[in-house]
Image (cartoon, rainbow, N blue to C red; front, side):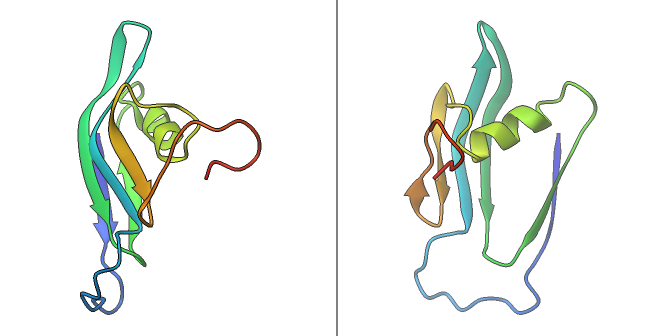
Length: 93
């Protein structure tokens, strides 16, 4: 799986604010089959992110974990500093 990003038009000042999206050591599995293997990712606010890879690489699973629709088996996901967890209903945060 490949991550491609474009930086914001202007580099943001280091104002101590959290990243827009941060994954740390994220692993996810379906039963005994691990499909996400320790992803670390930090995306600054205003950055465009593309997730690329062949069928079965874990792109959809990663997006489910990022959006809180699937709980990682380990690691953490934060959106603007708030931890994302598994939630039922329309909202994932």
